[in-house]
Image (cartoon, rainbow, N blue to C red; front, top):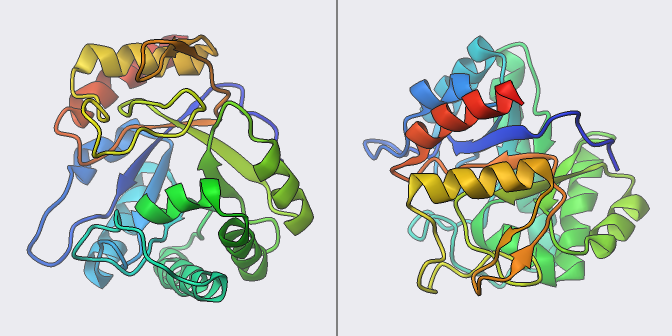
Length: 251
């Protein structure tokens, strides 16, 4: 496991446009974050979008993470797919390699991997899939970090990652509601996504300070996280990122 950073990092899912369809405001959000999770073409992103977003991240000195997903453009990668561990291993390598080609052309490389959507959530419950993703990271490049969900207890993830010799980064979310065990509340539930800027800020600052915040039932939950995500497809994300960046820089 990598050592915790002296301050929490800010990350955002980016490069999620596709053809004529536009998602997020990457140009204005990029200077406000530390890490950009870039779509690799399976849930969003096309070659030109990937190339442009990599260049934007390099210009702003932002660390680039691969954001691989199930092959689900129509569902934005948020639908579960019954892929075998072997399939998941292959689709991970395929997507990491695609993004890394643009990174290398721009003089950098993929710095970490953060699975997207349904695949990200499935890793919390399926040891075989998590092992396949860890093995793909290790196969692509020695000690390539994997970003996973910060839970109330991450011993399972740590054990599997140690076996694969893959560093972990633990991620929490500013704009998502949580279940009592630290899993994300499914988007089908009411109030699973926070939209009020002040609530997003309050949750973000509590996580950054290691303080408890209310789960979806209103009970206190405390998470240890290395990086904090604000979703790029949330209409409030840019305004929240600006305020949050300023508050964290003052801490």
